[in-house]
Image (cartoon, rainbow, N blue to C red):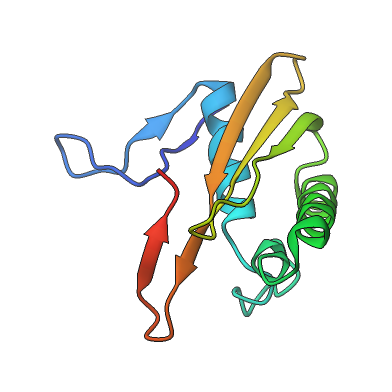
Length: 131
């Protein structure tokens, strides 16, 4: 298995670096999927998740909406992975939360991804972000 490294990096010869570690490849695919809002890709508007819309829900609804959005996206776009744990931290007083997903790879090894949400101001700039 071989894929382009994410985030994109160049080697000494100016070519895109590749990665061959299965867990890194799937982790990158999960990050790409979960950080892409539905509708962002005009040629594939169903790709991505609705996590961003969950951020506007109250606390209890946020957890449910985020879990549903993540589970549906993973089931559809990365069916070879199996979610073994999905943990959403409490929303902080600053308005952000970490989402940690642990998934079983096709070879049953585990890999995990943590997504940090951020709070955006009316001007579109990040006011705070999870550390």
